[in-house]
Amino acid sequence: DTAVSQTPKYLVTQMGNDKSIKCEQNLGHDTMYWYKQDSKKFLKIMFSYNNKELIINETVPNRFSPKSPDKAHLNLHINSLELGDSAVYFCASSQYSGAEQYFGPGTRLTVT
Amino acid sequence: GESVGLHLPTLSVQEGDNSIINCAYSNSASDYFIWYKQESGKGPQFIIDIRSNMDKRQGQRVTVLLNKTVKHLSLQIAATQPGDSAVYFCAENLGSGSARQLTFGSGTQLTVLP
Image 1: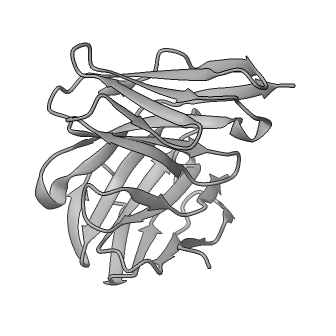
Image 2: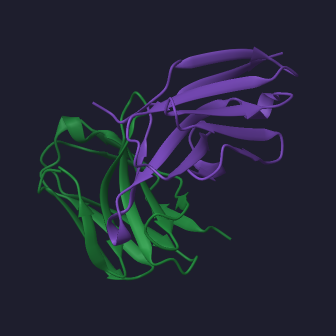
């Protein structure tokens, strides 16, 4: 039983395209997050949602727009993809803000 | 710069030896710390955590030590096994209420040699 799942696992697309990554958690957690991991393995938080409400929005281009249709889902939509967007994107969830986070398997995005 | 950093980006140990991974943090207000393990192609996985009111916490083959005086955190892995090969991250928890968030260090690649 997958706790935090993401789709797709791999995403290859061209510059300028728009793409979405989906995330679902079946843990009953209230808080969900999106992280970006670069080629040097550095993990940086992008957004966090608590009960469908945006809580944290780090310095991320407004081409990135998270959407939380319900507490169990947090999707990430990216407009006008750029080469620098290539990275692995991780979704995570926690019971509440500040609690231990559970990570999804990641989505490797490659922009060509 | 990052508020959480690691002393060594890579660490190689012989199978069966003990491993020590270090982490420095800069914010004295941090009150909760977590170590994560990330295997190749997978998401980070929780290993062990520690709160600032503790100096030491032990799990199965792992021990986390917290030295608040020098703002230093370490992860000790006993009898390192090939399956321990991974990138290890320390993370500190900052903020209050719903805005609490994890800030991750840059990671240490642990390689276990046969």
